[in-house]
Amino acid sequence: GNGLNQLLQNYWMVIHPPVLFLGFASTVIPFAYAIGGLWTKNYGDWTKPALPWALFSAAVLGTGVLMGAAWAYESLSFGGYWAWDPVENASMVPWLVLVAGIHTLLIYKHTGRSLRATHLFFILAFILVVYSTFLTRSGVLGDTSVHSFADLGMNFQLFMFIMVFLAPALWLFFTNLKRIPHIQKEEQVSSREFWMFIGSLVLFFSALVIIGKTSVPVVNKIFGTNIAPPAEVEYSYNSIIIWVAIIIGLLTAVVQYLKYKETASKFFLKRILLPIIISAAAIILILGFGNINYNKYGAGYLAAIWIALASSVFAVIANFSYIWLGVKGSLKLSGPSIAHLGFGLMLAGILISSSKKETLSYNTSGIFVNFGEKSNEKPGENLTLVKGQKMDMGKYWVTYEKDSMHPKKSQWYYSLKFENKNGKEIFTLKPNAFINYKGNEGLMANPDAKHYWDHDIFAYITSLPDPEKNKDTSSFNNLIKKTGDSIFYSRGYMILENVKTTDSLPTEIFGEDGKLYEARLNIFSKTGSVHTAFPKLAFAKGAFISVPDTITAESLVLQLNKVEGNTVEIGVKESGSVLQYLTLKAYKFPFINVLWLGALLMAAGFIISLVRRV
Image (cartoon, rainbow, N blue to C red):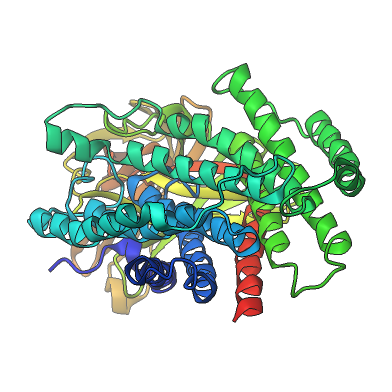
């Protein structure tokens, strides 16, 4: 075989998939409890032992999904951490439904409500895991996902696998629906359970939207339709999900300050007033001085970003306040607030790093690479670096210094020197890449990043010269010249300054009559750069040996063929294979660490809640 894809030969491959699949597998336990409750008619008894397992599943599956985002950011050339790829979506949707089920289970635990929804959410969370298996293993996503999955020819078996779980589960649920205990009286709008249920519905419907959009290839295949994917995949999802984020952010901030069953307005306002005041001040400072001016999709979308950012700041401050004022700093009781605080930080990190994501690699070299019609890369946002030449890139000078091959893999590492124009900082990034000739042909690239506390500089290779298509087929143009003569080439001219002769040479190498001729040529390019070449001709042990000189920046090879008095024969070759270059994409991600900190805190919150209930 071709072996494992080079992009998968990474430590994240050791960590991310096992954690993700443990999360997938663990959703079967809440599912089994819910089915067992319906089967035995003990509709509520199962919820207590199921809660720790549901928390475990949410913690592990959520961590696995976020590890995938970290993998994409650190190791893949996505240019980010989330691309709304169908396989990413298929892993996140079960987690959203599972989290919705955890919240309705907590409602049932404290009020006796929402038991029907809890059954449904836990059943669907596992069914969606099974469905995600169908999406990824059927090959139906082959044209819409960067994750490559071949059609195994097992679509019927995969479909039956889904039905084995789905049909009995839905039959049990709907035949028992009227028997599942529920309270007829409506909840008070001022109660905690009312708004927790609203939040669960928002999570559930957002999951339906995401899985619906992701399933378009399935619809096309089953019904023979030709529904095209949106021109702007990112915007088609974000324009909806940003409102989900706003609602969930506000609910995670406010709901914990409410009581179950009913909350007096005076009690609520007294507790929430301080977080509101602090949040308002923080939001004014951030929006006033943070330069959040993302205008790619117009003023309406920018306004949504501002509202979402305000919601995330409110969620962070309100949950931090609740930890100290609501539960008096008790770590044991702080699990939900820590998870919600982490969600707020994640949301803020996503909004800031995405809306203020800055392209650094605008083309200043004048060398434009054709990426092809199917590529999303824009030539104007990719900078071509010529080896050994310092290039202008925003506030940096960037030099492609050298490259080296991995001792055990067919990967080349490219050393790129970044010099801040203020002269205060120099650092080196070493992204790696190679051209794959087996399996999925094309450039395979891993990025590299320079991490700061408040931003990352992120770079990856987008184009390399293909050695198979760039072989040297040009020949030397031999010219007879004298000292002082000019020689013209396509990008400038050169002057033969002199030819030096050396007679005193080691006899063991050159023999008794050995001589070494060295020509000096000054080269002047149209760009204003000046180079010097020293081609040599050696007479050693009765034979002439030419030692050419190469000017990489000008794609020139100069060869000294003959020397007769003050007349010489110079061979001039312009070869595209001489020029060593690469094309680079570089971004600045501001406050990306806020996202990763939030992810860690959210996972920690789930674990603390789990430990409390074990």
